[in-house]
Each structure stands twice: as C-alpha cells, then as structure tokens.
Image 1 (tube, one colour):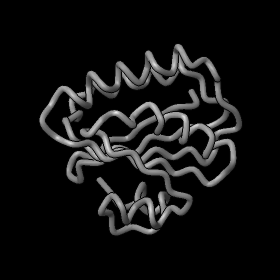
Image 2 (tube, one colour):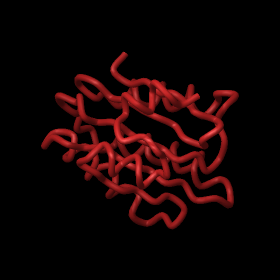
Image 3 (tube, one colour):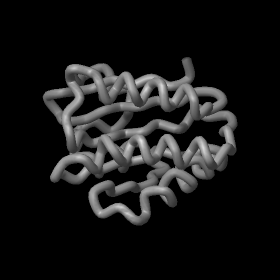
Image 4 (tube, one colour):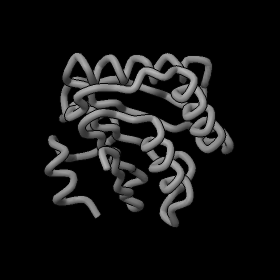
Length: 139
C-alpha cells in the first residue's frame, strides 16, 4: 500500500509516508486506521513524507470528503495539530499545496510545507536531521 504511518507516542508524533501514485481511497482507509489506533492522541504532530509520490488522484470531491473526515478528528478537541508536509519534488509540492488549501479556514490545524528533511524535523521539535535517523532512533 502506498500510504503508511508510524506513531511515536512518547514524542507525540506521527510519521506518514506516501509512495507511488497517491490514491484518495487508500488515504482514507489508512487515516481511518490511524484515527482508531490505540496510540492515537488528539494534537499529535504529523510529519507527512511526500518525497516518493509519483502522481496524484485529482478527484476534488473525494479530497474534500477526506479532509472533512480529518477535520472531524483533528478539530474535535481543544488542541492544535501541526502538520508538516515534506514536499521536495514538483509532484509532491502540488499535492501538499492542494491539501494545505483545504485547511485554510481552520485555526486548529497548522499546515506547513518544507522541502528539507532537517527543517521539517526541526519544526516538529525533533532532534534528528533525517527521516531515516528518526525511524532508527525514535520509539
């Protein structure tokens, strides 16, 4: 599956990775697993790695339905959620920008786009400078 996630409960961080062609139905299914995961907590920081996305589904009705579902989860609590999208390619940047636009009316979700792994991690308060290092050292 081209979408996966790993929760680091001690850090209040979720690492989400997309590879290949990004399909909205798969994104929705994986988000549902995250939202019902025993380690899910409101306000967990999200690191969304889009570096290996090769294409994106452009069904805006599905995208806004997925974003509405995410809003129900992220906005249903009195905490802010920081989302950092790592988008170093033109395809990943296009995807990140379309998702960010859907969050604009929200004050509870803070979406950012970065093109550098180290800066992405720094924004999320992580000591590592690469995603590989994060995956190797974080628990």
